[in-house]
Length: 230
Image (cartoon, rainbow, N blue to C red; front, side, top):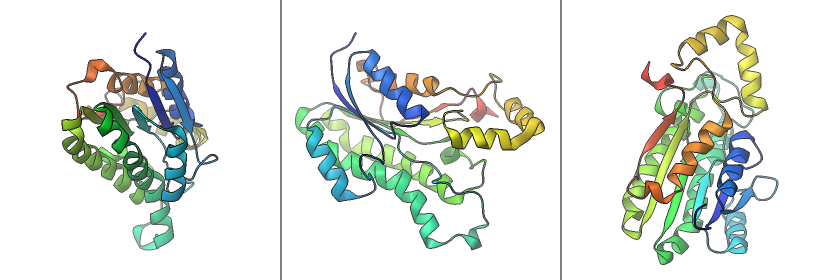
């Protein structure tokens, strides 16, 4: 059991977000899960209204994001709108939600911010979606910059780069589309020879949100079964 803190987890309706909500509640925190059905987190007005309703936030987990239904196309076929949709889902939500909580965290002299990026942000998108890889890389850069800015207020900012996690209909469809040969090849590139579970990512968030990580900030932790060592 730990001291009760107020946490907000975005993207809470899909596998990883839901598991993160459960893991933080299990250790005694009061957790608000929010998804796009409740607020458009890429809209500054809606973000401001949502966080004003919540009040003080001690822990923020930016898990909202994804590929918004897009698949690979050559870059010269990508429209402005398609590019912006993915940046709005991943980077804009992270920016707006972080901005909304940081004033209160600074006043309280304590805070934990955890951004859920992707292995695509450290390497390449397996599905070849350029905006997704770029926006996830931007989250990693944002993590480092905010860690530098907020560390003096006892606020840590860290990032997790998940590997292939079967956590929602999109990743399940992607896995099935690989076929037996593609699945075998993907698993061969993972040291532990298994896909990730949503709980694997939640375990990392629990650490970053805890007192045990008090001297850890600006880090991007790959939770990917060892895929990133290949």
